[in-house]
Image (cartoon, rainbow, N blue to C red; front, side):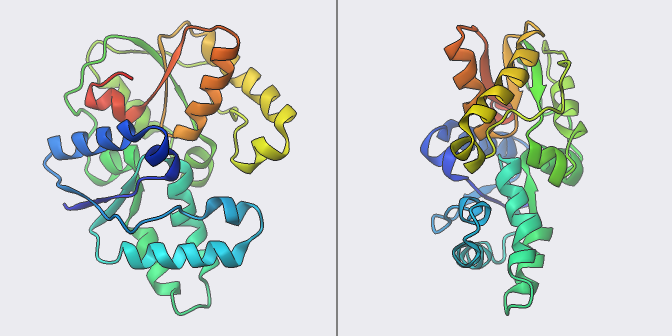
Length: 240
């Protein structure tokens, strides 16, 4: 299957190694990857701020950019949820409605694509560390992804997976939420990062780079020597 990579803004600008890790894993499994350079932001900031006309223009752009791709795969549950769940709503009743529904049917979050679409749980990775997994809200609540990343981690050689005591708590980032309500966001980060840190893990694994940034901020501020890492990096066998 030819895979078109959807690389969100945060990945492109701050952690490009995550996109490279996704490509390495997929190509190792025999699925060629392409990157369509005309892609842009998914439009979620505008959508969440109530600027739906602006978000609609971005959605139309994405529908056109990814036309004809066998599968569109992204390393962010948040941005994939925007494309799969909210594009059809934004473009309902427009000439682009059918194309938006078609794109939604071909768009997958990375772990979901491996497990649910390709039927792969063991990618041949080795990662000799104790890790815990953080569920991003959009991946968990909008895309209903919970078991796929854990099945992938459980198949990694020499990796010890431990669950935290607040597995479904939000990290407090929420895009614009953290900007508009910084005190609430920080309090939520304290609860979730504290829960993750109590596992005494070496790494916090996530499928959403924005959650990693939020958790990294709290951990570094309070001197916790725990690192965050994207699931794709674990599966690719790379450490930041």
